Image (cartoon, rainbow over all chains, first blue to last red; front, side, top):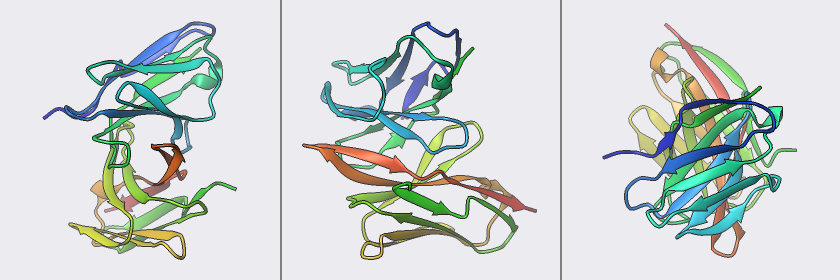
Length: 112
Length: 112
């Protein structure tokens, strides 16, 4: 049974560009959350989606947006990339909002 | 001050040693997670607990809700246990919404 899958695994972008990261949750899981982990730090919460609706948002600028599709997969979009956006972006899925989360391998974004 | 504090930040142990990693938090929580992150970046959920104690193989996790403290113990440590161990607390962030807040992690190195 496939776990949480994220694509791409690695990505290099230039300052000012836009990026889209993708996440496929475990089959049957309806909740997807996104986290940003900069080097040496713990992950920081960005968004949570459940049943295609945004249910939570962390302290990130409006350059960050996300959505969840009818099949429960999700995209994280970041506009006008800054060097400080370089990080590992993690996606986690859970059956419902309050249950155990399962993490993907992450997308490592480097902004140059 | 971080809402989730872990100690120690770094830990080096000889193979076979008993290891303890501590986590203290300052917010009300519905559950606490212990996670394992290997150098590749992917995160594996080890435990989710809201009270008492859980055991899985050589790993034991305990939580004291009154003292807002949790510990992760590894018995008979092995080099393959080398990883970053992260404590994360689950709390309500809005109506029907939950958020994970992470510690910075404890980097464990087990030497043969």
